[in-house]
Image (tube, rainbow, N blue to C red; front, side, top):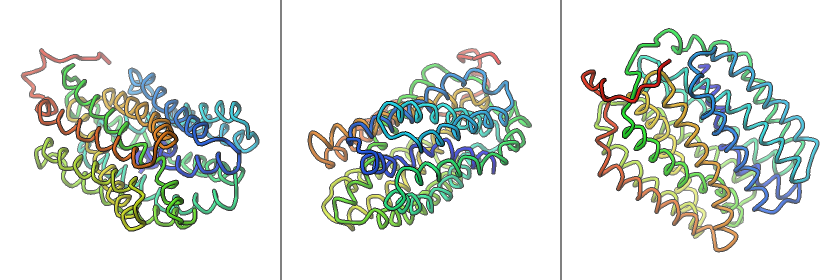
Length: 379
């Protein structure tokens, strides 16, 4: 439960960025590019923080790490209510990202050592998305009617609400089973999984960043967009639970290839802007596939290294790529159309499929006899 709640906070900036961009544009008077840059910077701060703490996060109390992050993030949200110009908002969102990065790193490290990391990550992601589903509807209403102050007030309340659960992070299987699986990984395996993670986040994050704007361009009200995305959030829960059920029962490579085919199609459909049904179906499939792929990749990382260091680094790498999504989407949308964002997503998903076809065998769990070839990180 604690891993799921802290995962919810870790992905909060990515989940609500469509509504944050809308608030910063409509309530603060920023341009789409400025609002996208702020969103990019916040998600990047989450990522860089996770990467920087990955070498030693397993050595400290996960609960204390998460509590420190919550305090920093909540303070940044409060200050964000009171400023409206570009530079102060940028600083506040960077601080918020640092705080949530600490929370995310603690949750990811705690989940890696579970007996069944597929189930742990799948259920945690499912819980995070189950909480996010009504949040989309709420943020759509708050962004449209409450403005900047109400938006960041809701963010503050959400962050502080997770505070009591942080003390259970050290009991969610994180410290009880430190030797539950392999604690090293080949350099090539880590690089392949890292590249897949980067391409996955870089390709799909621009879709989510501008899904709200495409809906508005199709003459849907912001509150209705939020409601429809909230309904689509149920598909995210289903995707995460599917990942936890599939696990390692089926060969990883064909499962991932099929998932990325669906991701490519959903990105193009959502960003096409041709009709509301095509937008809605695309968003539904997009949320399902993203929510399936994300915990599934983390489970692959846990197969390779149960200490949590690889997965914490992968989360950081993915979030850095994720942080560039809004900026890339903003550039493509400003200089062309939202359809170009869909083309970009499709191209990167196809790149991952090619990579899986030629290098996917490196993602298999190592055998014990391979220990001499491992790139160990001593703990």
